[in-house]
Image 1 (cartoon, rainbow, N blue to C red):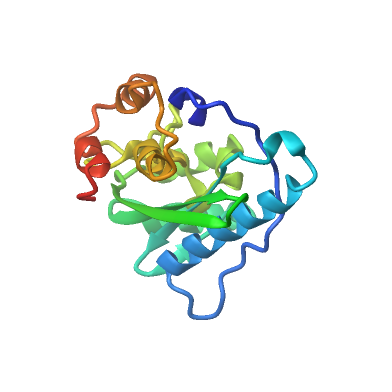
Image 2 (image 1 turned 90 degrees about the vertical axis):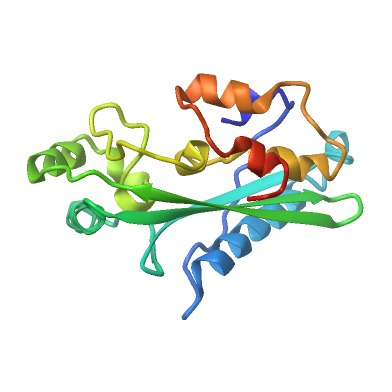
Length: 208
């Protein structure tokens, strides 16, 4: 997703503990993880002079249903339970972004929340989707963009957020660091995802 933005970037994998704290709300959970990832990536880059003035971008996405955080399923049985739980009703996808400027320690965070109405897919569809292996590394056990399963028929929020990176939220956060893109990010995002976004102007203006 970030390649659509026109920014030059380097991927820096990091390891952080993604277990929620006891009683931790979804908002605090994803913000904490995004900020922890940003700090961890910054430490990895300390020995690289070429990255001295770089910005570190980190994100964390989770599925939330009735206040419960749904992570990646541990096995097919848990994936089945998650998909049955979400079927035919709405839940939320939370993505937190953290942008860190290691040179001065300045960090800006943002949060995107999208309501996701799931269609009433059948048991046969659930089993076929699980057999594909796709749900096993996905929070909530699904990918909205999966062509064979297509669990969501109508969406009125940020589609890119459900995929995993809300580019308009990232754009407005990077703008705070004077790192705007030369690309029309909303147009590039909508063209790539095949989705006419109804909320991008409100996101970029700070309304959402």
